[in-house]
Length: 253
Image (cartoon, rainbow, N blue to C red; front, side, top):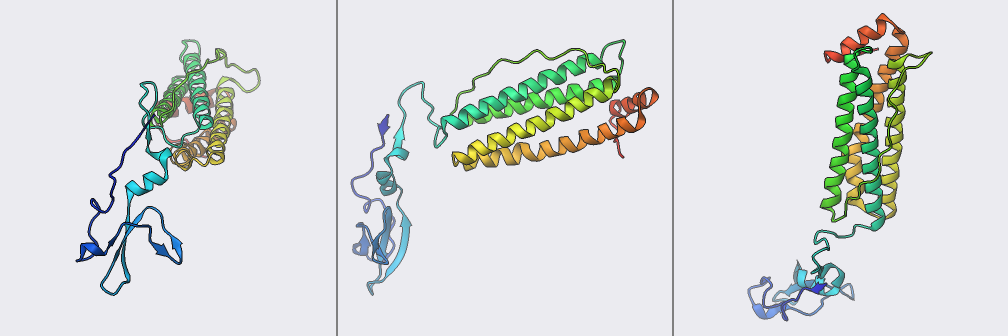
């Protein structure tokens, strides 16, 4: 680790705040009887304080942990106030998103079979798989942006059969999808809680702005799909629903 070096005299490089350079104060000023660290101030002709300027060099002298710049090749230069706990939690969420993508891809393959032939459901689950993978990639990009290290974990093999003797495959798969989305929402809330515990406001804002709202929308949409499938029942109703999904039409209650 290397410590940044600063000019020995702040007054020589700071802007003038009065017409007389001799009025510039390089010492720590008093405000309300207390010393103010890391600022430069100017004094007018009447002796009153006329300005307050941010002094980065003095601030960094008082906060050496901010001025430390890694020199090791394997250390991130960008990492700042990013805890190991947050880094691990982000890697766990990456694994959640990839697992979801794998499950949705298995559903796509099932409904795309020639003896199932529900191409609308196949399209929906393929798009869902791609979306989950994009979520994982977004988290990987964020991990790198914060100076963390992406560590991909194992993905479980999903089931390949989705037929259900009572509900039928379409309704059963959609109910499973809703359960997955709710579980993912719970995992995201856990990640947000970890960030809150670590006082990582940036990570909290990222989860809120990029994931939580979208997750609520997905839960609402799939819930409506389930209500529709329960209403139309098996047989021709499922085929009609499939056609709506295939051609991109809206499904409304």
